[in-house]
Image (tube, rainbow, N blue to C red):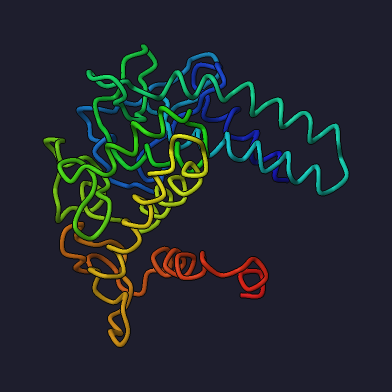
Length: 276
């Protein structure tokens, strides 16, 4: 069943049949009105042969998730005593990795700079830097040098790092709206993806500093955010003002609650986490 669902994306969301997938709309991605889905950046496209209809660009987050899913399928096969299945999914992930690194990382004008961004079918980059790029760190598809460049963007107050947490789109984007929905405010699941990726890469030689940024992101959430410290019982919300930590959107939001619990548990030992 899991393998069938994984295959669904390639049969119904690979518009050009090249092994890279696209969202059909913002709602499907979960980032409903994100800047990259605005009409000036996104248009629908139908493949008249396969009848697959998607947006006209490959999405870095979707393909990062699919890469990670291949690795999970390999681990599942290994746990089930299926060495052939494990070898197959490991090879699938390895074959995809280099394509993702070259397709979605857009180098900056200066050395050692750049970020992960969506890519149009014609090869040009979607001119939006947003939280979709955090998935590249979470899924561990970045090279060490790419991770360092992405981290530099994340740690820049003029781009992603707010006083409370990470913005959902770079502050440099003309459509940035600190009181919007997916057009600026912090969504804790996305901050957690970035945090988790930074912690993972901090174990690599030459990237130790990324762990400091990860801890800084976590500290800001609990020190600045409304409802994150005892005895404040303000319900956890859908999203937050990236500067003030003011709750925005719906209250009692499960995404925020789940990722807050994972943050609270990430220093506990594995057995405690399993018991929880």
